[in-house]
Picture 1 (cartoon, rainbow, N blue to C red):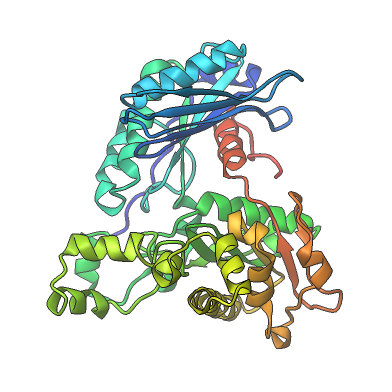
Picture 2 (picture 1 turned 90 degrees about the vertical axis):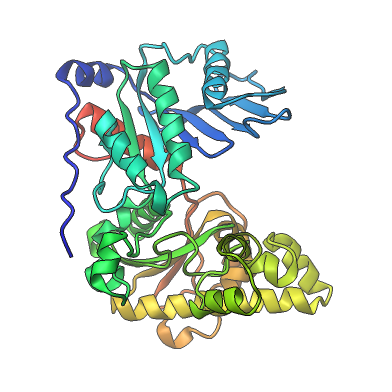
Amino acid sequence: MTAIPAATPPATPPAARAAARAATRVLVLNSGSSSVKYQLLDMRDSSRLAVGLVERIGEETSRLVHTPLTGDGAEKRERTGPIADHSTALKAVAEELAHDGLGLDSPELAAIGHRVVHGGLRFTEPTVITEEVLAEVERLIPVAPLHNPANVTGIRTARAMRPDLPQVAVFDTAFHTTMPEAAARYAIDVETADTHRIRRYGFHGTSHAYVSRRTAALLGKDPSEVNVIVLHLGNGASASAVAGGRCVDTSMGLTPLEGLVMGTRSGDIDPAVTFHLKRVAGMSVDEIDELLNKKSGLVGLCGDNDMREISRRIEEGDERARLAFDIYIHRLKKYIGAYYAVLGRVDAVVFTAGVGENAAPVREAAVAGLEELGLALDAELNAVRSDEARIISAPYARIAVAVVPTDEELEIAQQTFALVTGASEAGNA
């Protein structure tokens, strides 16, 4: 394989770095195709100053929900009505922040951090955004057609609003670039794979990085001393094997379709299914793409992708819901076992994201029967609902089982602030 040179992060000018040291706020932007999620954080104590969401951009029914988190009397505010594009959306966000004395023109704003889904092999760490960086992100659009265009739009809009301010891209794929070639390569013709950038990139990397590091802290160890299996279970779901703080395998691949059963995605499937659907069912490539990404997974199996609703249906004796749950758990167990083998030694299995943090039945079923591997839950601890990172394994278990709430926005803010201030590390989770 022809090596792709790593990007040299553009240097932050000394004057900008000095200004950033004096400033302590970071605005985190996550631009989707029709939405913008945002959080403003103060990096002195990692506190949130404001959070919000603009959704249905480009529609008549656009909606902005803004929640200031400063002062006792702060209340959520909501706007409805057409928001034509991302530029209009970000201007509305800036107005809401300014209303709370947190405007984008504030000298306390050190940088803007942007979530970028796909960085390929070139971007292995947070990177100050330049036109060259943007051009490379755009060049990766064929392997991230749903995400990178929206990310680029958000970046260009924010840069136009604050061209003087350091802006940083934090890539979902970056954490997984440490995978060895044996894990990252597909067993197809090498020249074809290299020409078309076909390999396993992995996603949810910001979450896996944060959670694996936070798990090490929960165990009272340095990340370099700990081997962890991270299970990020939301509507999208992924697993990773993290050895000494470095990802050595992950379940998502060229796209976020591979791996675990998800809310609407199939996860692992025989590639020949696509040929069969084309030849026998007469489905087009776009129809198959929609089937596997939007009409499969839990929703394809039972009509629901909300684990709470599936659990309710199971309690009522619904067999389709039970089968969907069993398939979901079966795939999850396979990955736990596989990554146990990859790592050789496991210190913790950790659940995170919406389902992983809140669905006790999923955690119970995923670990059940794995006692010979050293895994066992404490039923009472597993049943507790909490926003805190916690151990839920039985006292006699050889391997810790944990629940660690993910915080991708904090991870992006920490990486962004560390880069623009020249700090040696992003801070402790």
